[in-house]
Length: 225
Image (cartoon, rainbow, N blue to C red; front, side, top):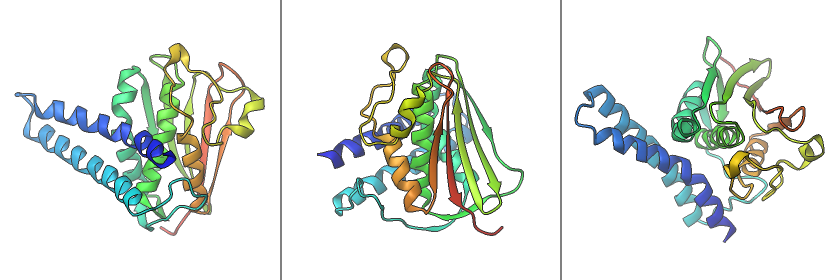
């Protein structure tokens, strides 16, 4: 049953992105360029959903401490674009302003691209749900020596310092969203931790307290240029 709960959690945002793309395709005045972009969104999001369903049907345990990875050399900018595309409906629904900061040059990692999309999507999802309407969310990628650092920062409800050690625990709700908008079962952040640690990295949570927003930093081993 836990496997199905995680699957349901992980396909919500891809399905929302597909729904938005379908609406674009239904617009009679949509340009050929816009239509092609909508088709590409649907294709990418269906690939993500197919990966998740295939893993479940083949017995892959999404609750395992170490997850099965399909590593390849990936460009983090592409991962960020897909993650933003996936979360855009949720971000738009809250009227949030999303700021994306990427290095001027390409940043590569030897990693499972689909898994890193899951990481970014869950961090953006968390930031959007824990932010005031029309809040600002910042997603940044930095190449710091032998590390790649992905940060997601919001100015939302924040966390009490006593709860920081437990924020990545499975099914742990460390706070309440504004107007009850957070919802969920506390799955996303625990999944982020498992994916990042399976890549040999680590994830940290920081908050100055309730009402002071939060910062989540993912640190991954970097590869050469």
